[in-house]
Amino acid sequence: MDKRYDVIVVGAGNAGLVAAATTAKNGLKTLLLEKHNLPGGCATSFVRGRFEFEPSLHELASVGTEKAPDTVYKIFSELGAKVDWRYEHNMFRAIVRGENGYDVTMQSGIENFCDSMERAVPGCRASVRALFDLVKKNNEALAYITKMKGKPNGLVMVLKHGDFMRVASHSVEEVMIALGMPEKARNIICTYWGYLGVPTDELNAMHFLNMLNAYVIDGAAMPYLRSHELSLALCKVIQDAGGQICYNSEVTEFLYNDEGAACGVVANGQKLYAKEIISNVIPHNVFNMSDPEKIPETDMKLANAREFGISVATVYLGLDRSMEELGIKDYTVFVMGDANPRKQYENRETDGIYIVNCLNNVIPDSSPEGTCTMFFTIPVFGSDLPKDLKPEGYKNYKNGIAKKYIEDYEKLSGISIMPYIEEISVATPVTFARYLGTPEGTIYGYKLSGWDNLLSRISNEKNEYTIPGLSFCGGHAFRGDGYSSAYVTGDTVGKRIVKKIKGGN
Ligand SMILES: Cc1cc2nc3c(=O)[nH]c(=O)nc-3n(C[C@H](O)[C@H](O)[C@H](O)COP(=O)(O)OP(=O)(O)OC[C@H]3O[C@@H](n4cnc5c(N)ncnc54)[C@H](O)[C@@H]3O)c2cc1C
Image (cartoon, rainbow, N blue to C red):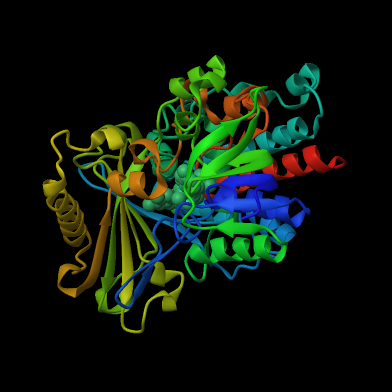
């Protein structure tokens, strides 16, 4: 291994891959180090028997199409990374149990979505429309802010983007109530909170509305060959551009020079140096792998002030019947014990919320003929794990989760699943902690709520972590969690480093 690079990227997750592809493609000597023997982090696949499972991706937002490309499409096209995209136009089916329960299916496209909402909650159309009008205005405001080189003009913000100013610091619930939206309509729209891991009375409205808008306008997108396809497409860009990817190369130490700038890392016992280090690894871990003397007090305090985001338990099933034979008709079903997102969050250990996906609905041949796969996702914080959980009890714990949710879904949907299970795999926050290396197995980095919401992260980003030569990208960074956000941070940081090293635009 050559020991001096322009850029070393640590971690080949979504953001690390895009960052490395960007710097390599722009002629910087780039080394990407990944602790596993394959790329992607969450964006990968795994095989059990004759099934290749998608481990993480339910829905990718902000993709768009060739004719109407959205952010992710543009990032991949600009890099020349080719992906065979497939789309789902039913956004989700939401089933709420109990007296005030409901069973509704929402479609993508603003008009279709408003129609589905009006069918579910007669009379709500005007308030739902108003919500999308707000999203449009917010997007205009964000476009203005992003275009500005310095601080946005206060007068322009107030006079032209007043609605943005009014909404920006409020929660999703507060904004929906202000628009006069009936409670049931609010609850249905808020079904998606699970994807951000923060209930909607504490989640920033702008953040949620941007995600909702992305799914409503573009629908959900999935790569044909599981998310591994995305990661491999990006690896090809890196390697075609002369970048180097080293697998089985866990970084164990970050190195700093006498001036306190990051200048290298240690992997497999070797010291490797670069002008710039980009970390796809969460700051907590980076600081733990650094000489504490080199970490400015404010950086350490910032990391420690943040809360870890949510993790999940997942159950992956390979079934020896087709989805038609089993009677499965939906790609995404949210099952909830109560209509209210706060209660779903608080009751997550009993009957809060879980998601059931069957990829064959979108990609019929994603499993062998006559079979299908199912994917259950249950929100769980690492801190929710039983305090007395021991290695010898872990198998039982996992089996208990699988049994509980499969049986519940069988009872609710009338679909028989148990007799047809050919392969089963269960993951918990323990799995994600081990695989991704994240504290408490967080899959969403830091929780985006309160003072640490998306808007404040974006606006403070440049003042955040201050170590020269060290940049962060990933679900833990300034755009929050999720595939599209991780790609955006990889793209932004990658371009910033290109500009810094090479100059120009
Ligand atoms: C079950 C599940 C379902 C999800 N569903 C969705 C969804 O439907 N839509 C969506 O948008 N998002 C979803 N997400 C979230 C999304 O996957 C993540 O937010 C995103 O992939 C994070 O990307 P990242 O760039 O931060 O990298 P990560 O995926 O966190 O990868 C980090 C990489 O760094 C490597 N690494 C760690 N430590 C070291 C080290 N010391 N040295 C070298 N390498 C190291 C890891 O091995 C890994 O490859 C889901 C996640 C999970 C787990």
